[in-house]
Length: 222
Image 1 (cartoon, rainbow, N blue to C red):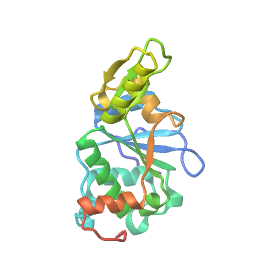
Image 2: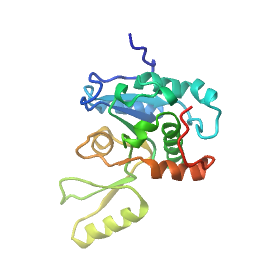
Image 3: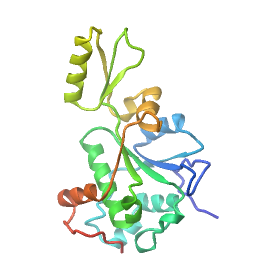
Image 4: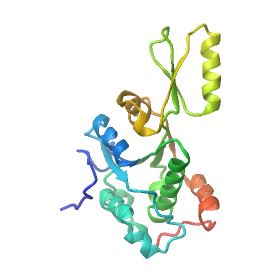
């Protein structure tokens, strides 16, 4: 019998070819919203409790004993470190869903380091993603759908382009994941057809190591 972490809201499908993905969500409040709009067939939700440990600097035994990482290992069902087997993974993808601020970026970077150190085949296969929550939405009475923007420069450029095209422009700025209405959360972060995601790989891990780790060039799995 599979032992799953108590905070996990699991999906119904699992394994290769299932399309199953595990969302690691920053905070219980945002995770609660994700649970409401997720696809229960293929999308599971596990909230992060506080900032992840730096797996590039902490001793392996301490990393293995960390409650968050233990919950992740239980949810994935494929071991960790030298025992990790990609073919056994219960989810085809892991999606990091964090606030679009400095803390959220830091959390995503630390999780990238964990996958680099303890679930390297998953990262190597580019099956770990970061979902980008919008900073704001621009809308107009003359357009059917809003324009989502993700940083200040895009905000200015999009607003200018809409006004130049003759549209009246109104803006809604979001305060983190918990500030997104459910429709926006689903469209921009969860729905595979409309969300904006970035697949993490070796270059991302190398960049995180330079900033947060010890700069070792090869993954250490044990």
